Length: 361
Image 1 (tube, rainbow, N blue to C red):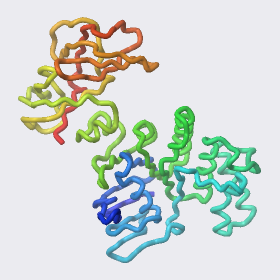
Image 2: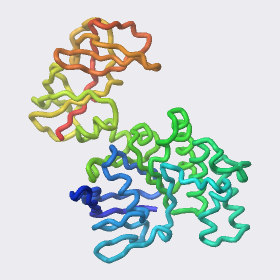
Image 3: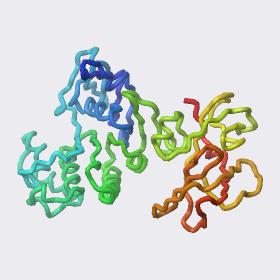
Image 4: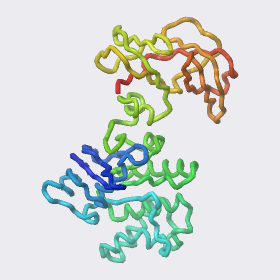
């Protein structure tokens, strides 16, 4: 089910000041996809989700789910949440402690006055889907955090919603359980084939789960694209820095040569792949640490060679995190565990022009 948001605005009054939680948001969420709203705390992503589900009333704009307009300030339309055909999974699970797993999952169907036979059938199907067969009569709060989150998912699915919305559903889990639950959620949503809107501030969740990502900042959509587009070809400094570890270096674009741009920076003269029309002048050079393959010594002089010294090394398991000093500039790099490097060693790397990202905003 496709979701369209047009010109959405929502303001709050806090300490006598008017704060724009949503500032003219336009969004087109494709049907049968996992669409993530990603951004820092306070950027408006949860407010936008709550406006879509009907738990918040926007000041201006329109929201359509499929062919039905569920909100329009201009037309005076505001369809209540229970009539929008949506399911929702909250950050806190919202599990009722006095109910069994069966009763928690069955609740939406009982509200709709479904027959006992249908409730039994649909609850069994939902629990089977989330791999919780056999725990129907247990107290829901006696389950692990990951199991409780699956109960919340089963409850959201049991009424066969057109769209399911997730508000930071994994943030209360520890790191290992969060990864396991994320993988299970990715599998469940892939099998369902329905539209899912997912809110998170965790870039790993966003990159791993999503078909599309909208990055938000200060109540506005900054960029929208696939995980690969957002990560490898960000258009703004904010998105490049927020979506992953990044070395951001001031640079000046000097010339165009073929399909490359000649750039001067604190790292020296580099050639960068051209992704946009030529713009001579000031820019920001973005280089991801994983593309900096450090090697001992000064290296042979070749294009895009960068030389420096190891300032610090930290072992983090799969790799070392190294700080490399180039003049007055510190760069973050990742090195393979088998590379023999020490603090103070001269090192070099050669950067592929395709991995030099230039940003003008």
